Length: 129
Image (cartoon, rainbow, N blue to C red; front, top):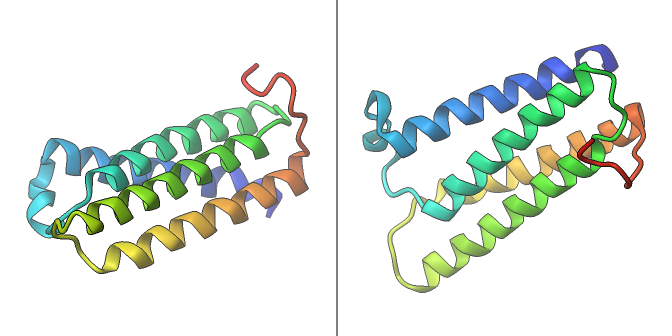
C-alpha cells in the first residue's frame, strides 16, 4: 500500500481539482448536473485538492512530513461543513447528497492522514520545507 499511496493521493487530488474547477468555471456544463451547489463546500474542496496535490509532491520526493498537511485539509473540509450549515440556516437551496459526499471526503482525508503518519511519520517543524 505504501508504494501506491502517492498514486491514490494524486488521483484524488487531480479528480477533485478538475471537478471543482469545472464547477467554478462552468466547464462542460457541470453546473446543470450539480444542481444547487454550496459555494463554501466548493471552495473547501478546491483548497483540499491543492493540498492533496502538494502532499503528493512531498511524498513522491521522499519528504517525510506529510501527515499534518492532510490533517489541515480535513480541517478545511470541516470548515466547509460549517459553511454548509450556515447556508442551510439562511434558507438557501442545497442538494441533500452534499452531506454524504462531504462526510466521505472528511473521513477519507483523515484516513489518508493516518496512513501518511504510519508510512512517512511526521515532524511538526519545517512542515512547508
